[in-house]
Image (cartoon, rainbow over all chains, first blue to last red; front, side, top):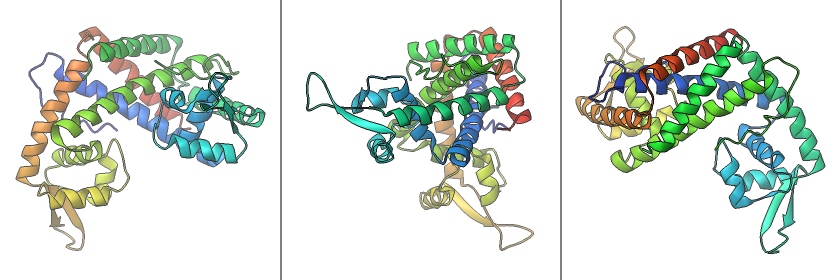
Length: 160
Length: 160
């Protein structure tokens, strides 16, 4: 399933071949899961991953977020957040509120309906992931979580 | 850095918490690398990841690919492949050729210039990955590659 397009071409650096292979495998796993989650969100909830992502960010922040803060919380797409929020407001899942300190600053938060709707989606989202990862052992989870943590630290320490 | 939006909410399934955490960590790593690779491709080669992805697929298939086959080889975006190929043809990096058996079927392949340009990009792409993953040990690579392989098998065995 991977398309190891340049795997044969060893560069000069020590890990060259391994880095590329790891990146392609990482991408293959995350693209596959993401694609299926998108499809299930569409079919079961008539919603999109960017919408789910915005709701998830607001669910984590019950006091609301400024629009600029919201972008930082998104995992998937930072594009057209404003348009997504506008539609969520129109659907009654999100509401605007004025900032306590500076009333010109607009914050957004989930409405009770938004919280409830999201809870249902989040449960299903977890169930899909549990299912897809059902063959992994506890040891597999530990190993992968620790390895990806090391990868993340390496990426942060060595910005490209 | 992760936005573990629903990590606290344990579902009924055995791995629930771990599955979600693993997915978020996976996504965080791959989104971070992808974002930086996109930025570097733009700055250093004035090109995009979907374009790079198409060139990589054609580089792996020296005899060319039918447009329908090309989509299957792409890792990143399956969207508007036709438009990307058209532009690559316009830039002299890709050329059309008629299929040997059925001349109505169009195949595309890299031109010599396309192959050369891609080789330069691929070298840099590998160097960026080597750099970003520079703090990983050989053992880390082995562990992660094996773990992600197990994850991929699990995803394939348990379609969501």
